Length: 344
Figure 1: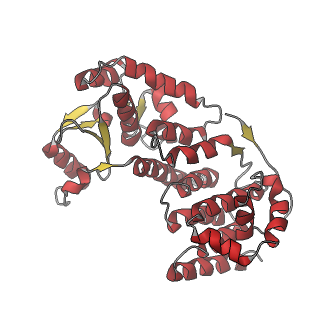
Figure 2: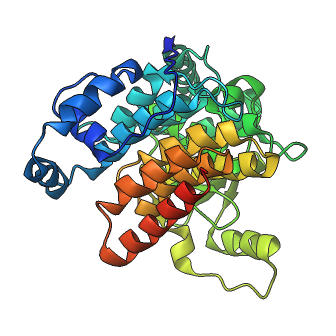
């Protein structure tokens, strides 16, 4: 992966005008920010409003975050924040309109933000090779290859190790958490013409066999086959016999939701570890998902504030207020003002 570190010295205020300028074809490099602000200042207010009305607020958000992070690297909390091509590839992957989101590619692109030397294409070829070992259309062969020959298993000893959430590490270590193991299982199944889906059972993650309704695989348990009753039993093992199970818990989840859950898992791990720098890139990716809520986008500002970057956090809160409903905008502007009051 090629990476580019961009350093910008000094204090700078970045607002919606930066995003508007970049949406009109300006360079996205961090060292162009001052020029972008100058160009934006000449734009008419009506032009800026039209961009928001066209539903381009996610692009606006991305541009503002990119610009803000270009100046954040001067802090000791976050260290050097690389502007890497892998981020743009992730955005293209999760927003792919034609071929659709390739789940394993998105998972590897997440991992590439932590493992800067990761060769995504090589990892995809490794998955291809595993898929070639499976007899086409045979679920039993899939289970044999993944869980007997490849010895894929759940990590019960170091469950919260971030490596368990990185698909490249799962490929090499052959262990991980339920959702990452499920992503690999689904990817190999697709290569062998075995249609599978992710099932977001609360507190766990399973794989649904689409050709056999009511049949599920538990990759964390060595590919164990479950029926609906087995899933209910597993749910009660996790949450207690008094917990209320609903059939909707076994509904297939879409790929974007799976990616969101993977990122949310990482965010929780890094919060528990106090790793603010890693929280930042995870929150950033999560804010770029299609359909990302204002709350998800605001998480970037929250992480920046926790790292002492109140000015940068204020700018993101301010930009989001431009596209939020009135009640939410009021809360965002209040958060912006709190950030600015802490700058003194």
